Length: 183
View 1 (cartoon, helix red, strand yellow):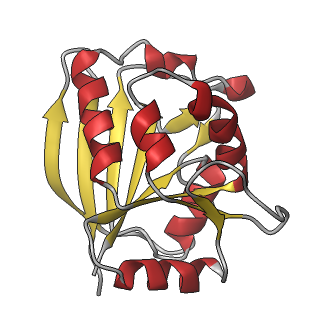
View 2: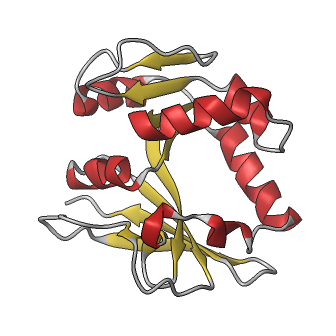
């Protein structure tokens, strides 16, 4: 069975967006080493899942981009979760046919490596609340934002995790990989 992997960039104080929604602080810590790691992770995933807002942002950017992340973003299958969208037009994308838990359960049954969940914070929070994330890959950047949009919010029950890997990048960003402990 495939795992659902959430990859998120997070400030040291736990925010995924600074006040006003800014994310430029992330790019201060992305060098060739970190970029290679992320590109490889994008390629290794069998399918990418995301919510409406992330899909709309990515669908505007990646099809015409020449950046390192563009080929896997454009060539890998994508499943979009939205209650309001009627269609998607980014190549290899489709709208989820069922509710989030059912759709992810069906994706997990397929053979392959893993399902890569892209935030937005609200999509990531929904996946966390529903207990659908098997592995968290948090890239913690050496910056304190002092406010903004937190990664974890409105989680009713504790999510127990097991740290399985840590990797320090030259920029000071640190990847923490946690697996969810299931009872």
